[in-house]
Amino acid sequence: MTSLFKIATALLLFVGVPCAAGQSIELPADPTIPVVELWYVDQGQVREPEVAVFANGRVRVNVGEGALWGELTVEQVQNLVSCLLKQDGIQVIRTETIQQELEAASQRTGLSCVIERAGDTIIRVRTATEIYRVDGHAVGLLSTRFPDCGCLQRLYSAQCRLENIRAIVMAGGLESAKRLAKLAEQQLQADFNETVVVTPAQLSMVRTLADGTRFSQFLIPSPTKGLSNAKIITVFESPGEVPRIGVLPDGPTYQ
Image 1 (spheres, one colour):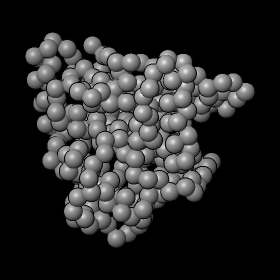
Image 2 (cartoon, rainbow, N blue to C red):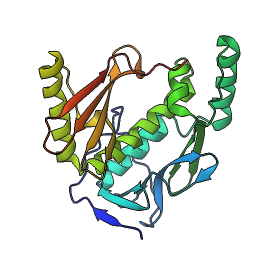
Image 3 (tube, rainbow, N blue to C red):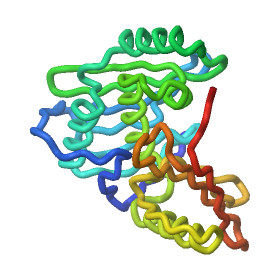
């Protein structure tokens, strides 16, 4: 049975990489049509989209066999679409271009551009007049392996933007995401004597287990290498225990 939960708190547009609002883009008039969708494809199996954003601001996040719901304002949806199309380049980059870019990088470096058993990403953006779709294989892993592949990095930025929306919904809304960010800051200071500004914009993943344990992950971009070499901060919360922090200081490495 599909379970639906309403996250009443409206989300501010904390979407990974900040971007300025551009010219207004006309969206589909039908509020039941998603204007932004993110899929993960696992071994060729496609389920419901991980994230679906509708023109009226409704946000559906896939959780197991059910869903969580959040909301954006119409203005925030417009800004999200603008960021994805223009800053992240979804309107100009192509699946074929990314593949060509990866194959060239693979030949140059000797590293494979195929990750066995890794999934694929699909991002689709729909305006009133156009539909844009970009696919990518093992986007997170290969963006680390091939940091100079510009089109792949832009697709990864778009993926992170949508994963941030998903994480805020799964955290319980904006106020909960702010609490987690502040908790991460405080525990970093207490455990590692390190001062780092952590914001809801950097929340990338939230997972809750049946026993109430929750894992929340923040990606802190590198000042020079951006998301491809981000500091990873994980907050571990268990009932009755003091929250714990895990830090991967130089981001993921995948060779």
